[in-house]
Amino acid sequence: MDRIFIVYYLLGFYLNRITSREKLSLVRKALLRKLEKFLVRNSRYYARAIPENGGLMHLPIMTKTQHFANFDTINTVDITYDKTMETALKAEYSRDFSPMIEDIAVGLSSGTTGNRGLFLTSRNERCRWVAAMIHRVIGWSWSSRRIAFFLRANNRLYESSNSSLIHFQFFDLSRPFEQLMVELSGFDPDILIAQPSVLSVIADDYLSGKISIRPQKIISVAEVLEDDIKMKLEQVFQQKIHQVYQCTEGFLAFTCREGNLHLNEDLVFFQERFLDESRKRFHPVITDLYRRSQPIVRYELNDVLSYAGYACKCGCPFRVIERIEGRNDDVLVFERQSGGSVFVFGDFIRRLFLLADKDHGVRNYQVSQISLHEVEISLDIEDHTEKNHIEQHIESEWKNFCVANHLKMPFIRFFDKINFDPMIKFRRIIRNKFPLPDNIDYL
Image 1 (tube, rainbow, N blue to C red):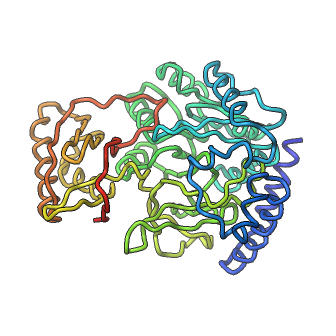
Image 2 (image 1 turned 120 degrees about the vertical axis):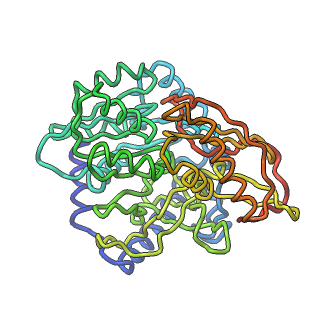
Image 3 (image 1 turned 45 degrees about the horizontal axis):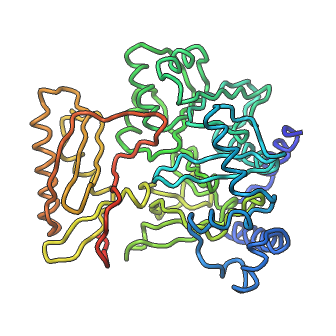
């Protein structure tokens, strides 16, 4: 039955293509009206909230904390937060991700910022997701293909794609990585899907001859794909690296044939909370146009995105994202020399390392801001005899940046090793939790 629904939705994507912004606007308006009617009838939370606020798009913006505080009345399948969490945690501990609550699949996000999230998906939602993935990410083929998927946790959402044409194999990152590499070689996938930090280690093993694989397509998920990691992967595997921007709240963006990252504007209605006067960087405020079991409405993500500002040559009318810069916690805070403080986006910090590492001696790095005055930098260096030289260059570039922007120089402490744990999303730039000053500007 799942396969019939998947084919139905897949045909819909191919036959009802949206080729213009005008058509997209009409489709979204109709879907928003349909969603509003459904929520008033089926969600206890929205049955009260929508009439009080005068319509779906007049609802207050919802945060993750508010969403899960009202989980029991928001969802339309009468499943409590406690029952969902109990089922999800049991799957985490047993590593058996097959149990569901009736026909509802349950998932638990990894909680990059320490705040885990739950998600529910019905059979129809899972089938539509698989169809969207085939249409926009995997691509249709009459040939049988093997797909290797590295993630912290499995879900029925992913396993719905298995068929005679698609053989999906989940590689559980809780298991020993060396063992996974042996199995990966034996599986020899046509499509390889993993987070950038894992893809980077796979590339190293491939170069050293530890594994032998010939993927026709490589897809980065779950973490920010940094430019240098992307370049490394493209050089090693001699192909374009695709991205999927997906989170607990939905399938948000995909890479087209031109290599640009498009928002899924026919699946999700995007609004923006801009973060600076340039109106380029923003937090997305999303409304899933098809999610029914666990509605996502006017929900603000703490990801930082920036628009590219150009139309893509591929012909897709959906807007292009220039960069996913990471979470709001990936933005550092600097003190001004004249008083006050500013948020400094990750792009500025990445540029420091680019300028300091002209000889490409740094394989990887991680910046952790401990307080307003302290920063810890962990380095993975190719040649340890160059350690002091590289550290001096990084500190010098940091000083140049602070002088140019009239900022106070923090104390920098260097560490020799980055601890790689595939079960934890890797973040290069992290602002630890510490009291923030009032009225922080953006650089």
